[in-house]
Image (tube, rainbow, N blue to C red; front, side):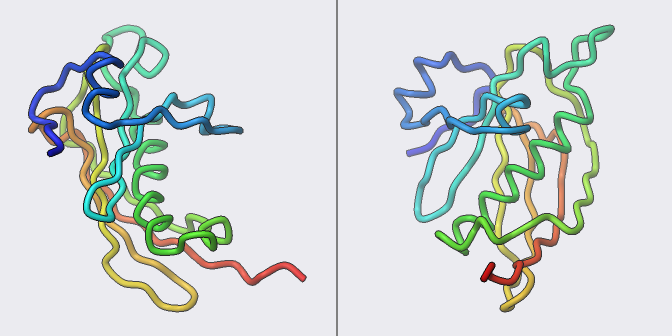
Length: 149
């Protein structure tokens, strides 16, 4: 069973719990590395906060990183819903509310859920947390692009 009540985990502890490090390209690779675990058909994403993810003058999570993580984390619910068609989905709207901060060395994670899906749009919401502390909440809309000919 997934245990996220602690805010500090080593990579070895994450692997022991069943998390896998995501190999990503492009901007996502620059923002990560991200971690993923799937349980009961839902994907949860996480990230171990490093210095590069934080405001250098106070050592707390940077808002830009939290917004990027919200985009990727909520996108996991879109990927779960769309399967192989997930690459046709793009973020068209993302609202993020900052509630608290995380610090270097803490593990933050995003648990997201699909609220509604039509043939052209998906509505998603989620919470970003470290341990039991909420860092941010987010809501987003993803559009499904037409298939390329």
